Image (tube, rainbow, N blue to C red; front, top):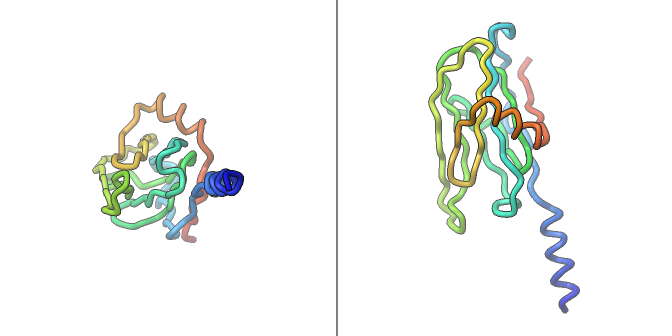
Length: 141
């Protein structure tokens, strides 16, 4: 009986969530003037079996798994970014958002937690991004 329990536990942990695109995002009109927004979800035991829905300007664009990041090029200007998670054992979704002003050539990093969306300094964001795998976003042609 104990062997079955450990086998089931191993299968559950091996099947941790991975990310996938939800929506094709249009590329910025002028890529040379674009900014980059990066959502980063560190790997952790809590929430390892769930994805977080990423939002850009009101649209759900990606399901981000633990240990992944997603980088999106955007036009300069105001943007509202967000994510959806769940408060620990609750089924009530938590939807933190951040309103930001993207500057041409800017790089903006955000750590996605179960209950928050935290802006990171660029050096910390680059380091966190290097520790995670890149998600693949679909771009509209």
